[in-house]
Image (cartoon, rainbow, N blue to C red; front, side, top):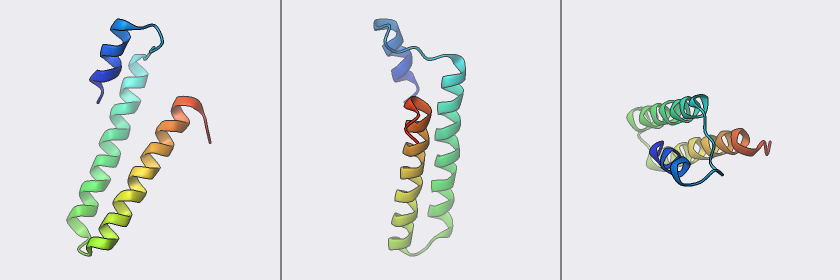
Length: 72
């Protein structure tokens, strides 16, 4: 996922990520990936597990969108 903006920066000037952007994206992926892993390890009920994972994904997307364009 992090390689796509790096490749896009080679071909267009519309994508301008700095090192801090890559670090922030990696942190978002790592934190929310670990949270999802913990959900799968400790939640046994499948419906609750899916609801929690969906909530985590929605939270990650909201944080990503707010960081990208400041929608919140």
